[in-house]
Image 1 (spheres, one colour):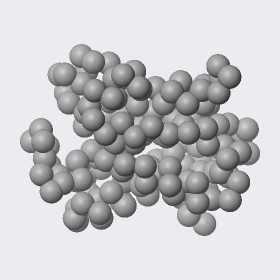
Image 2: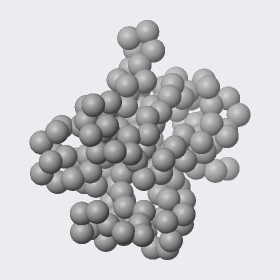
Image 3: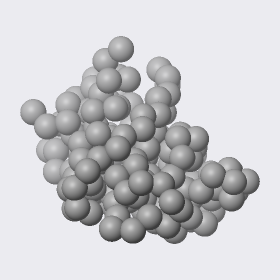
Length: 160
């Protein structure tokens, strides 16, 4: 089973819905999730917040945090994961869980952090988690590793 299908099974068994917020992965987490049969029972939607201001305007990430630390920071990942739950609300009901990716896929780094720096955020009714990763490889490899890390991070939290 893939990480996406395992996360789907865990969320469905709890009756929880999901929102996905992505930056460096550009929709790849959502694409992987919707490849799972029945994903519509869990996934409400996703936001690709690639530009830093969109993280604030659509996901509610604190503007001061973005200004002080930039978009690649663990608190940004946490706020993205929490904010997407409201961004994809249906009939006033927020998604139960949110997952986010933010990082630097390369080949250049806009803020001096090493290429391959990635933060994953997960927020659920059972708790929250952020994980930092330092991946190597080219842009596509870093993005692919980030997708798998997102599902692994959520799965770890769900299985605690």
